[in-house]
Length: 266
Ligand SMILES: C[S@@+](CC[C@H](N)C(=O)[O-])C[C@H]1O[C@@H](n2cnc3c(N)ncnc32)[C@H](O)[C@@H]1O
Image 1 (cartoon, rainbow, N blue to C red):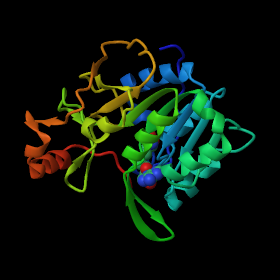
Image 2 (image 1 turned 90 degrees about the horizontal axis):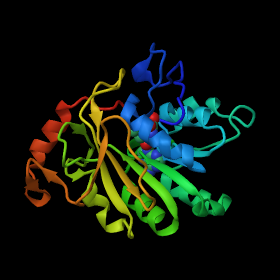
Image 3 (image 1 turned 60 degrees about the vertical axis):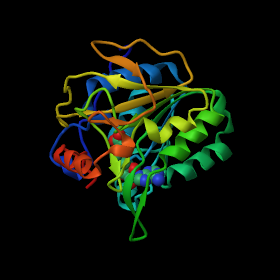
Image 4 (image 1 turned 180 degrees about the vertical axis):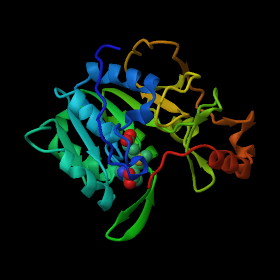
């Protein structure tokens, strides 16, 4: 990769209490290297779903010349991480205590020029969160992709936990026991952009010892991959065990998913 990046020597994630390293992008070397290569050439980084800022803190502190925006609507998580970012030490960072759809509105109002810039998105807003003591759930992936592909000009959207039909060992998310976070969910919202799957077959993370599916949607020229990672253009179709999605045995999917080690949202 073009520039080595430093890892934080702490983690605010209770699941990793006592660990002296936070893991951006699951700690996966292929993903860290490839996304950082795009950030290196971009003007801005926008993440949806900060959680414990493992990724956001890493990008903010390693790419001080880039505008970095992230959002976390969970009050407890936001309160835990907000002290990491301030005007003096991290003037390049904006952390918002709101949902990703509200963040899109915030950017539209406060940074309307961002649409003309090169922007790397890390779409990772999903799951439950607590707002004023109330449990909430959302999965704004379609809205996010649709908005970006119809409003931005130079973008690379990386989607976390994305089903990879070419590699069943890559972890992915399933919502409400039936909706697979994968190509079929977003294929209708590409607006001419191309979609790819990261292809690699080696666990490289020290703290999260599994592989995670990463989707890439971009309207820009692809940057070359390093090591033995490749990119496969997506067909836009989820295939599971060789079946079309309308024939999927969702109980089988759910059990398989439950058997995988999940990224903790404690
Ligand atoms: C998997 S974690 C994010 C991990 C983080 N991006 C990283 O790489 O370290 C998902 C987070 O998304 C948040 N979230 C859920 N729905 C959201 C929404 N609609 N907008 C923004 N964040 C959301 C959750 O509260 C949770 O903290």
